[in-house]
Amino acid sequence: MARIKATMKRYRFFILLVTVNIVMVFVHPSLGIKSIGITFKNIKEVLTIIPPVFILLGLLDVWVERETMIRYMGEDSGIVGVLLAFFLGSAAAGPLYAAFPIAGVLLNKGSKLSNVFIFIGAWSTTKIPMLLLEASYMGTKFAIIRLVLSLIGIAAITYTTERALSKDERDEIYRRALVVE
Image (cartoon, rainbow, N blue to C red):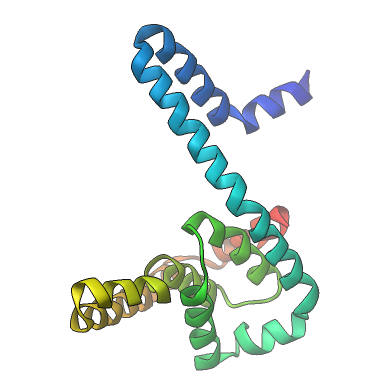
């Protein structure tokens, strides 16, 4: 019984989504059917993105030694760690939710927390293909201004967040990253 409760708790949002979709079919059939269609479309999208991300995670975990990660993105990595975090985030492809498992592996491999924050910020705002698209549609000046403002914003958010976290909170983030892997 405890196992069933744990499973129900773990999947409560999925169960709620299914329940709402079923209720919608009976209350407002056309909207319910549209909602179910959108749900399946989103599930399909997630299922096409997650497997490559986990393959990448496995390769990262096997190919990159912990000592190497500590040297290039650890506590004493300095500007090299910051630039590497920006590059990894900017060169990545896929939606933001794919960045979090990778961030967990980076933490487990010894990356500095601020470098992981920079990686997530870069993933969400400074992707290279997005910059090229912006430059072609909005102009190079716009793309460069947005990139510079994004970099300033990422740096400010990273600095503020790292300073706001206590040592216990930072340790908890590292502990939770270990649980995910």
